[in-house]
Length: 400
Image 1 (tube, rainbow, N blue to C red):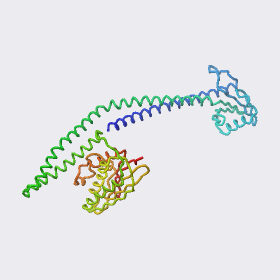
Image 2: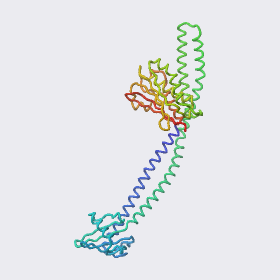
Image 3: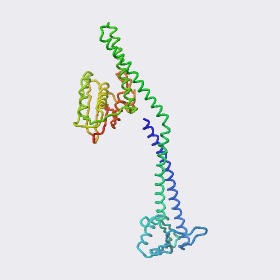
């Protein structure tokens, strides 16, 4: 739980930081690109106004330094009037550049093929055109993007480390409180098991003795209630051990096909007593690494849940199959549709989907235990419910 909380804390921090850095870098890049474009247009306006006098500044303005050339177009005749591209005179490239610029129909634009930005002025007698090389623009933008990316990655790495430290520091009090709570639950469960065992033993002795009907009925009640209490304590202890990771699971090769079949066979009489038919279909030789006892408990929880809450005279179906590199176990039963908001809470401790379930035996810990067992085996468990059936689906990796 604490690990998930820390991961969520770091994820939220990094998401916010990434958004802020992204917005800052986008603003810087956009502003720089706009500034470079404006500078290029100022150069084009200046060289047109100066009629192509190379390197001569306008009044109070800087000297033109980027590669450019100016062209005068009169009818079908075009000639270069200045700039650093004198070798373009009377070439097909020049004609193509002018044609592309005039075809655009705008006073400014870009000739992408030749990486040129242009400006056109028409004084009624002829057109003056100025072209500037965009390679400097692109080089500056590429350098800026590269630098921004490197700075961004470095900043994210540093902030990730800071976020991890902050997450560890911020969750320490929560971790301590949860650890104490789990320790109390574990200790209380251990302390309750001994007196409950004594009560059950005495109740069994009273039941075996020759007592009056009334006394025997009291003894039976004591035995029944103490048995339920012991079940609750054992389930709470199981979850406490799972939370504390105190139980070291010994994972061995398990034939899940045989294991599920054995569990189904043992539950078949139970289902029959409740007026329900248990049907199962298991693909052969589905091998996983797992704890056999815990896997039997997982299957037992799902079968017990289906027997308790399935519709009367409706079959319970168990399907074990391969799904890519995972084993897929599905236990389904017909019954009332469980709303989505309740489905999401089925694996919460002590949660009961509806009031009618409160009439059934159990404490709302079976499905949380099943989820904990699935998690120990690096698997997942989920619930689905529709008009056809309610289904619990477990997915566990196959043995490699």
